[in-house]
Image (tube, rainbow, N blue to C red; front, side, top):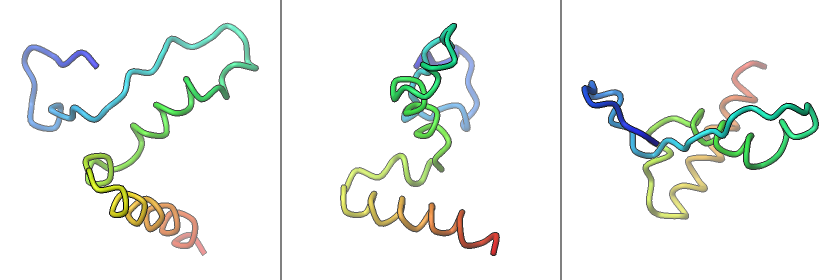
Length: 72
């Protein structure tokens, strides 16, 4: 990721991934190299910055369960 020269505090997120240019074919939009960074960047900062694997898995699971079951 290329940080801006003048950045605000919210832009200091070094855990964001670069998303490659969109492909010309619809079939490749679902490729992991395209969808992986999109999904990672959509996660909250609190989850992306966790360094302990067990805590990361627990927070990720809780995040997705909250997304699914809060709508019911």
